[in-house]
Image 1 (cartoon, rainbow, N blue to C red):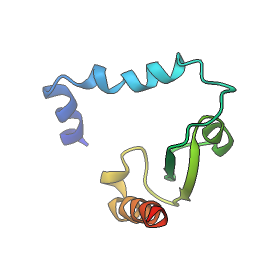
Image 2: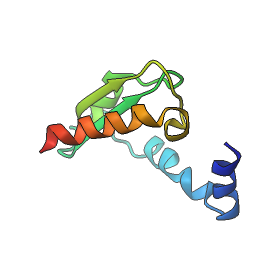
Image 3: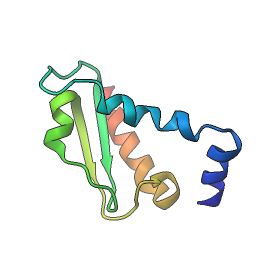
Image 4: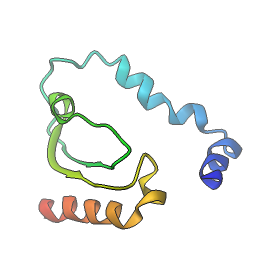
Amino acid sequence: MLTNVLLYWLTRTTGSSAHMYFENMHANSWGKQPGKTPIGVAVFAEDIAIRRYGESGNNIVHWSDFDRGGHFAAMDAPDLLVRGVRNFFRALR
C-alpha cells in the first residue's frame, strides 16, 4: 500500500488521478444513451457498484462479482483481476 501511495506522491499525480471522478460528476450524462464501446466491470468484495447505474451510461458486456479483494484489486487479489480481464477480452474475440 505504501508503494502505491508513494507512486502517486512522488510523481505528483494524486490530483490528476482524481480528475476522472470530478469530470464524471459534472458530465451531465444522466439519461443519455450508453456509448457503443464494450465495457467490462469487475466488482470486488470491498467495493460497491450498482449495475443499473453503470448500465445507464455504458455498454456493459461483461460483469464479474468477486468475493474478495478491494479498491486496489491488483494488490489485493491479482489472480481474480487477471481472470476477470481475460474473460472480458475472450468474449470480444
